[in-house]
Length: 287
Image 1 (tube, helix red, strand yellow):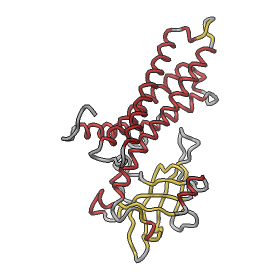
Image 2: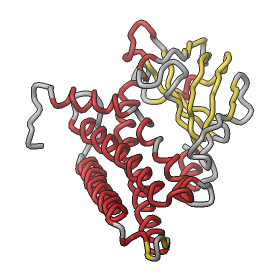
Image 3: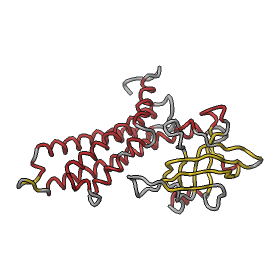
């Protein structure tokens, strides 16, 4: 397939369409429809908060092909966006992650060839849940990098900022925040690396309901997301008024970190996943 080499080389930018205006945490409640008409599918519906959506050259998305079957009636499709009729893309303005464009995608009788179906008819639900596990582990790493940056920037600022005739790093309140930031970062690092290592150890990286991978991925992003938000808030506090100014990098990290608390399933949804897997009959606490 010509798309994959071009995507890997950076010639093509891709996007993934899961979330909808009325189907966020409840991804399986999507209402976008793909109806087969002869050798084509007619697509109607919309997708929201789509990363790269307004600039993507290729899009992979999910739609209901058999609504009566619920989550078992979802299929995955792809298409090249250039020159497609019935496709509308609108950039969404966000307070953070400003360097990553996000869009609202609307399908209005958009036609795609039947060969653009991926993985078989009504098999999209399994593809979707498997992908969410690796996405959550990846986003844990995003939070981790931002936490490390917040700590490094705060250490430098605390050494350089002079108040009452001495560096603020000499004050116990500041030292306490730095210690908490470091501890949160190291604990997050273990959670993220542990989940990633477990995923790499699996011959078949299958996630979703009833798997340890689903639990570990959700736990990693839950912890990293919440700790990242706290670490960034502490970094702002250490920087004081300067941390609230855009020219200081910690302000950007503060805005960006919140996304990892709500993206790829909110913290509340992650807790639901973890509890569900802890309570299943064949779960062993030692794992």
